[in-house]
Image (cartoon, one colour):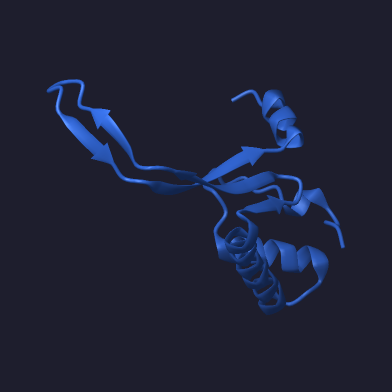
Length: 110
């Protein structure tokens, strides 16, 4: 199901939407109970975490991709003191936006 009217999603408030407001807007446009929408988002979040654990990558539909990247421990030097230090290995999340999102950002005049 798609959004019935875009006007319902346009809000004059300048603050970002809260989770509750997002659930309310989607449930109003799709004629589905808010509790069902909340359950769908919970399942989607669980799926995201399980896929990141399984293969280290998850595609967020038309928004982009989340990837897990690992960095190994390395030896570094403090530029002020010249002291040698060891930087621990890290696991980070990286997000790369889709071409569609990048093109949309180019159209904004903020």
